[in-house]
Length: 155
Image (cartoon, rainbow, N blue to C red):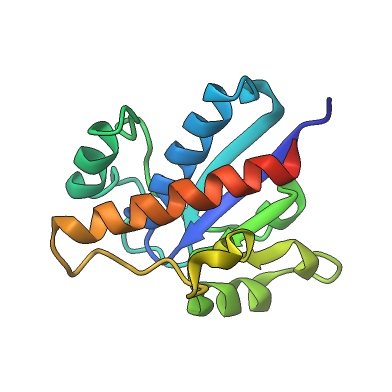
């Protein structure tokens, strides 16, 4: 069985993409496919490099049995486009930024995460940063559904 390398990307790498990294890894492990995937997350911006995920993201994920506490924010690097098979953006702005960064021959790896969840209606994972705790629950629901669909497509 081949290994799939996936990078989840949002703006600052403290909310959506760390939740996606944690949820996808959790879903893959539950399905017995933990060794099949290398999963990381990053941000297009540099504001939070080295910081842990937002405490609200950590708490919401923990309530679902997912531990994000070891994650630290990092910024996307050009070398990520070679290192990963899929670079999944949480929204259109991140998608556009990633396409601009992608070296020649690697843009095909950049996709919107929710393209893997056609029934989502919208194609973006909303940023919960400036909202309340319930926004993190909505985002986790979308990410979990998208992760399960993506896992089914890749296994």
